[in-house]
Image (cartoon, rainbow, N blue to C red; front, side, top):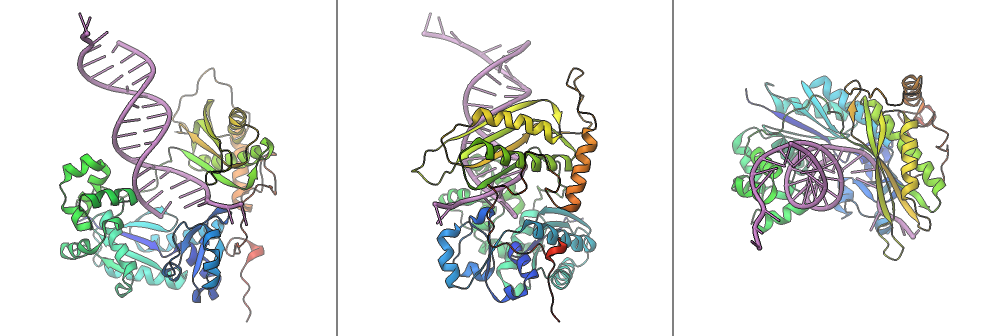
Length: 421
DNA sequence: TCTGGGGTCCTAGGACCC
DNA sequence: TCTGGGGTCCTAGGACCC
């Protein structure tokens, strides 16, 4: 039977979430900013039409946004995660097998579905009605083609947000007009390099000599070209495989000079990374700590360093991870710099029960597993950071700037939406 | 003043081993 | 002057994605 994939992708996801909880925003262009209100990471179509670039530094476009009456919001990940879960639940209830691909999109395996386009339209209508989330649906015989169909569904409103690209004739028609830069897996660099080979459209790429592509770009581009020709190289995954590395890193809300507040920030990042580690039932065998000053201002003295350490025994205990991380930080910290960011990367991950414990390794702290489990349960129920290590302050001086934060309208009793009758 | 965070995969090159 | 062949593992860096 012919394979069929659908890609369901929310339109301007973060902005749409803000609109769901604040309906007056539906009549205005909206943008959402990154952590620390640094740059623009989501734009509604009206904001895009104003020429606001993805990744534009906020301080550079602030005037333009204000003048055009664009609503600006800090990113509210608590809200977005909750809306995402609702969207995925609805899709999962309607489609055979789904693979959640990111916070705002998922794949569905529509192999054997009698009328895939109609199913796509039903899903789209339900998401709009029940959650208020607009989505695009692309359907085709490979993931790369489904992704391109999704692009078409968003680009041409006349499609009604759903494009079924399973027929070869329709595939070819779209491939000929789609710029190669819109193909999934072709980034800015490759697009420029492809242009030098006179490859401008998705069609040009699909017709190009495969061995030459492989020589110039590697197997990834070869796969992309094959997928454009309807040869499926990427399949469905049931769930995301366990991550091979887990990273937590953030810019500080302000520059830090002393080691003390950096230790606090690092403790908070290690706590977050350790939560993620436990949620996929992994143990870390080592970790890397990095520290850097800001990179954008050439007038300030710059310093950037990182160090990797092996843990005496693979662990998921926040306390052990933090001890190793703080020792590592101590080795790379140099006084006299204005630090902007630090990060922790948990590495050499293994699944619990998969490794043989070293007979001579230090014994784990008694009750450690249970303690971590209880801590995760409390934080899951009552909000991240309710129970934390003493190293992590309740109200850090280095925390994120989020001056335009919306309410946690769906996850916090104190911040529910008020409706006046 | 102010430029995100968290991942993946692939490749090349060096160290090391037999 | 001449200096093997084949393999593994690790790391760094590039490119990409959302």
